[in-house]
Image (cartoon, rainbow, N blue to C red):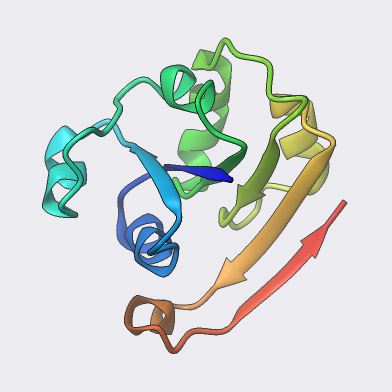
Length: 123
């Protein structure tokens, strides 16, 4: 399974670290953030990354999601979509991505050191 993470901020980078040992692709508007994580082949175009993965993790600020979703011109119906964005409902995620498989989760910051707890729900 190939996992794509959109957003290399605090939560995104914690999730990337947690996925160690998996095939993980990373997309962020800043290549410097991606490179700071030790990733050499990052993406700034989410559509390009999404086309190469099975699971898409949205780890961006909720207020950035609408514009981001509108910019993605790729069908995600067959992708599993995972969101760590507060305030974005499963219905909104389904409408924006077309995915039937949505996982909405709320990790905490202890995840950064491998001691976190995550509450989640799915479709």
